[in-house]
Length: 267
Image (tube, rainbow, N blue to C red):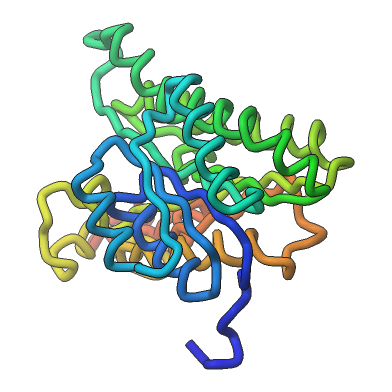
């Protein structure tokens, strides 16, 4: 990145949840490189501590179960006490869950919604008074391409991400006049421990994504760049928006040629 693009978050206090790995870690590192004071939350404190220490500087970390209201109260209070304010919240923590509908366990459904949907609601609840006092703030909800479409076997996950998309718009209305912007980011396939749990080489994984316009899986830093923009003052007139960072997945997929077929194409 060009040197003149550094410092886009200079002095801003930014909370990133799910920051121990994947997109959360990439976002924390990118934000810190742009001058942010980062506060990292995750249930995996061992990895979280390692990330915070590697970032260095003012990086703050604390165990955070995003689905727990009291956890959020303690965490947000600790961030405010350390840095004096909170400028940005990136609700990144998330879980994915695959199951056929006839095998769905309500406990799994509640667990996924607890992290993916209730978590961002609680985070927003607890940072809002601090942001209102400052008269500004940016809240970024990491939804998914599955918050813009449907997919087989993803009832729990898709429900949670569609809900987060709608909640984003509700909070954009509710908080806008207080100077707080709320937007959602919708990643497609991303090369993270969640998106590539088997750790397969990118060349192999890209075979799954070859029918997308960009024909490859995304890098976590590419998602973090969208959050960086929304967190910065460059996005000062953007709220209630949904930004797909999905390699064109929501635009559609390439048709497959069928040799000898009169139609020649199939989805």
